[in-house]
Length: 240
Ligand SMILES: Cc1cc2nc3c(=O)[nH]c(=O)nc-3n(C[C@H](O)[C@H](O)[C@H](O)COP(=O)(O)OP(=O)(O)OC[C@H]3O[C@@H](n4cnc5c(N)ncnc54)[C@H](O)[C@@H]3O)c2cc1C
Image (cartoon, rainbow, N blue to C red; front, side, top):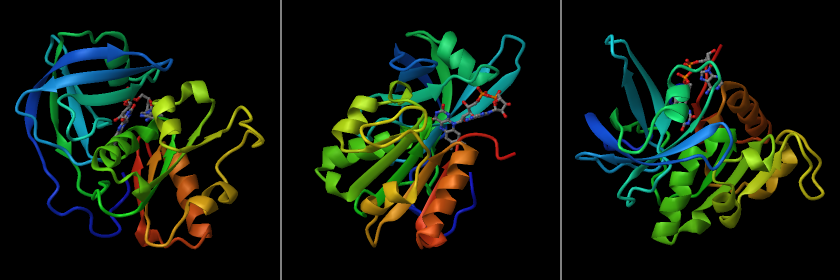
């Protein structure tokens, strides 16, 4: 995750380690899994926050990774969406092995920077599974009747690989595809022409996705004159 460039939500909630019982496992998109977790003594999160999931092997070896929350704070279950990386230690276990009834160790909510305050206008810019925290923001906006505050653009290889595609399209998100044309838009990466109609003064811009997507999107936003102080970035993958 990049360094904070200014104040986030100073009093964002934080929770310690909890046990989470897996209540639901779905695979709506290839090579990914959506987990619905019943977390004991759950601390309500703010949209944009994440959790850490810790796995422990029989020999005591542990591995932990961060996952953004997809659910809205009012959802009785905590929803995570995990993209499976072929050589990934944790994502393969979550995608291939975890079943309803399993118990996981989780810690959260975490983070006060990449958080939507639920009252300010925001432009949400996602690459692939980077859309997960934005799903929480969009669901929260819908629950509050404040959908006009959020504008969303998602870049993905093909629509069938887009997590939450139906929900995002219903929310009016612009979906940009890099490997297939979409309507009259040819296949290709996010451009200034995609972003300009979505931008409004006063918006905070949230960028989420792989390190390469986050870097490219941030540079594009800066070429449009959007000050770095107004851009919040969360990177999912390695920075190297
Ligand atoms: C704040 C935060 C929120 C996150 N939220 C989500 C989320 O909602 N959904 C989700 O699927 N992931 C999310 N991630 C990424 C997640 O934490 C793991 O990095 C990812 O699941 C890979 O873990 P792994 O153990 O399977 O792979 P590892 O065993 O850690 O790595 C396997 C290989 O893949 C590379 N790699 C690691 N992560 C990525 C990546 N994201 N993209 C491409 N290559 C990678 C590694 O360098 C290595 O070569 C988030 C990360 C952060 C920091």
